[in-house]
Image (cartoon, helix red, strand yellow):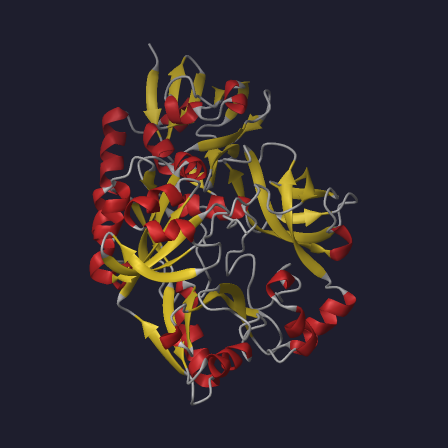
Length: 398
Length: 125
């Protein structure tokens, strides 16, 4: 037996600076000791030594997150601040690089957007948070992908006006707690978190430790991300793990959870050739920004908004049991190539194979029959509405 | 009594007469993780040593199961298609993949016995 194509967990981003065999250069997160203590199977990922799974296994880690709460170490991701004289200035500077609505972002609100190149291709996707504290006016917090962070920082340094300063945050860890029990778990040590709306953020304390909590995530479930000083991360993780509902979850389940939730993995489902329109991320752009433009690649993006893109990212549900992995060719019913799978595998909550990929727009409607070329054979599948497993984000009562 | 041989592709052959019952080892299924899909060869298919004869997939990866010897597939373990998780539970027992009627027994020469395979796994770390 030997691993074939698509072996090992998806690597976030192709821009990893290190070769596969340069393990001596791999970085470790502040939770490295905890991962090894818990029996985490460590693999190189975006330049870091990260846990792909724990003894519970990918399948049960995935299901545990959907049923209770999973704790993820996402400290490899890049945290940074943009600081300017006031919100308007900082937001305008960022809006010159991304198609998202940043100017109108409210206090304590966060938004998903993406850095674009001049051709409208996606350089990275990121989360942008405006601090809730009025004294932080003019400051935005960014979270970017680990594999892209150096390039993102260089890109911003080159493009930002002198009035807006970029500060990479190197002394903070990032933990994610995801799942339907996340809120009741947080209630024990950070009661303020239970009252937060989805996609809001707050500076607060967890068990007396200063931290920055946001209600968001990458699994389709309710949940939080906790940004905390490096030297306190282990303590918070161990406290969370002391709760019966919480298990530590590796990158393997993180990948299957986000795939079922229809969320993009940079370097796979989106890259510097795909536009936000092709990637079905138009929802992340406000009406004003679509109309006014003012971001890199405006011409292409407005043209695709007007005429429709040639290809589009869709969810895919194979009809048999065989998973279709990244790179699988997609054909129409006549056997003509119409696209390619960009992420694919087995969805433990979907109880079967799931995938996403790009198809020519004529084939993008839900329920369109397609074929997936797995081991030389066209296997029947259909375009599926995303998310394949419904999102269960928290909506604050009005 | 069956003679058990191991390959450096982490497969085992349980040989009785001229038929080898083939599967993946306990170590192999541990490396693979939770098995969610198995694809088996057609009975009657002629395979050459080293051919990709079956497929085993976990949540995170796909892997090929090679024919460890040349011959004819005389039986495939249909239980695995409905219950791929059996590969994790009983890899070297109920979760065999296929039985191959061996065409050339000299192909078994140089394969490892249980002790040899245990050492091989230990050396691989």
